Length: 306
Image 1 (cartoon, rainbow, N blue to C red):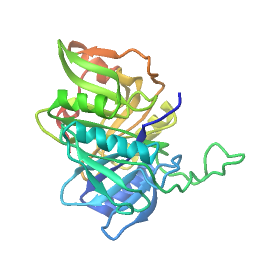
Image 2: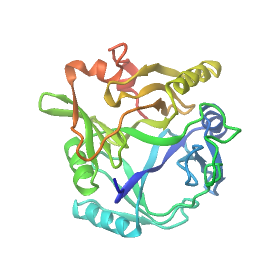
Image 3: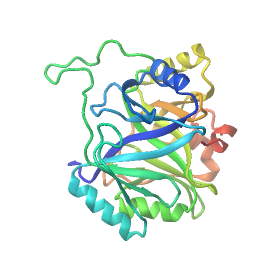
């Protein structure tokens, strides 16, 4: 399938309370690679198999949570087309100049109906993945921690759920892949702009603009088990796992960074195409949908956000 329009999640910017502790967590334990810093105190990180300069920005702050999530579009023409779509939906946009984030081109910023800030951009500096483009090895030496392959998605809690769903599917061309429903009420929507099980997901909430977790892809179930070992070795606050989701079939583990932002690392074998059916989970089976093995919800998983 030729990919056009919005291509993929590009990065997320997280607020952290202690930069030194956060860098130890994200670089030494998870295994992201630092690529730059700026005069605002922000630190730029990437996963090893990403070509772009960064996929996670850590911002020093007195509160945790997500500053914004950004998606990369295919061309500059797509950027202006989606800016027009957003405005036509009745949402204000703002242009962030190129270079405000180091190595990133001009961004179109808006606040979605559920209260989260999103950016779209067409250009970002590429620094490579540590391997040559001719006769590359399968992975570079010197990887650390859990060895994440890419920043994959965010799960977000917010209000105005129906309007937010309509905005993403109509104005931004996202596809619904899976959902949780309670009768006629949609409780959760998993949305993709690619062939992945989801690139962003939303949970119905009375609060606006909440981050549930930022997620990083690992290469295998064995990688998820290794992540569990590191979490125990380093006394990282573990929430649940290793286990499997029913939703998206992901093999997963959840834990928290030093600021209280929830992280996920996972492996998956799920995919979608434009003609794939929507998979539906019912509220009476929500335990199995989220934690397939135990079939029981973890209380903090449904209640803690940042």
